[in-house]
Amino acid sequence: MRNLMIPTSQLTEPAVRALVEAVNAHDRDAFRAALAPAATMSDDGSERDLDEWTEREVFSSNGHMEVESQTDDGLSLVARYRNDTWGAMRTTWAFTIEDGKVSRFDTGQA
Image: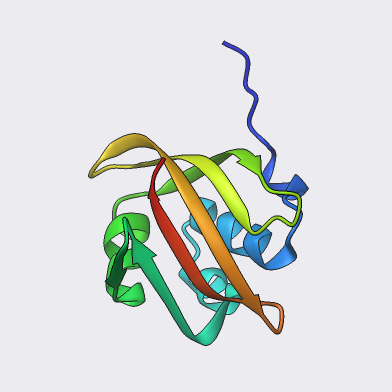
């Protein structure tokens, strides 16, 4: 099977690129730096506490994103997401950017 993933370096929106790179590097500091101070998020349509969710779903469970596609503006992604808790799944991600930082993201199964 050929790898048809989009390299992180080719993600259009710089703030989204920084966030995805931080997730894949398991870099908490870079992740926080990519976020606006009062950033919010939802998972499968339910509001979540961003710090608790990212610790559980990303950092302590070795989360990793492989981007399949992005919209032209780079604010929406379809990605294969995997972690040690849930394994691999196809996910959607939608981002809101304010002042060059991610102020909100909404994720869920695709």
